[in-house]
Image (cartoon, rainbow, N blue to C red; front, side, top):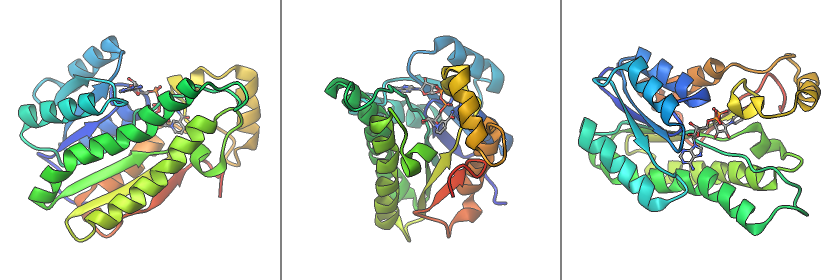
Length: 246
Ligand code: NAI
């Protein structure tokens, strides 16, 4: 494992769920963690208390807005002087069948889940290229590989991340920057807690390992990809799904 102490990471949606587990892992390696959030102010305050103002910061903004993404990246650089790691983790669901989904519901999920990763990658790129170092990890989903009933917007955004990852990996290869994707299966967070219990039972019945995953089981793969020693891995997709999709 390489030395990550003194590095700075921006993790969108870092104040809870999978994002928080990623921050726990990175902070454990001596990384200063900047946690992004949209509305959950209380979780953001707990995040700051948990990691301490010396080694952490919080950044409110809507990643579906290019202006907010540019501002958040500027805030992180002003506060910590640089950015070594970007984890595009924040995401939302607005589930409806295509027949019922409005164009606004389609656009909202595409903007937050896919365009946000583009806006933020673009905002960090010049600085990473200038320093000849960077790690970008995108959090997609098993739904991006397999599709999901009532999830055309979410699945399209999460599949779109594969193309973004591979293209940006090609554009940055050999320049010290790697770009990879992690595709979680069903993980115990607020997102899955919102799914009705009966529907969740059916999901678990389809998972070969027979249970949901824990946020840390995703976070440890992100930590691996963000490690300086993972320099020869770029443009790849890593699944963490209990065997749900092979
Ligand atoms: P969560 O719902 O617990 O957390 C989502 C985070 O994203 C929150 O911190 C929220 O503040 C932030 N966020 C939401 N909309 C935002 C916006 N417009 N601008 C900025 N931040 C925003 O979600 P969870 O479960 O931790 O998921 C994290 C990522 O993992 C998401 O991209 C999700 O799609 C993905 N994922 C989750 C799975 C699961 O089973 N929980 C499975 C596969 C993928």
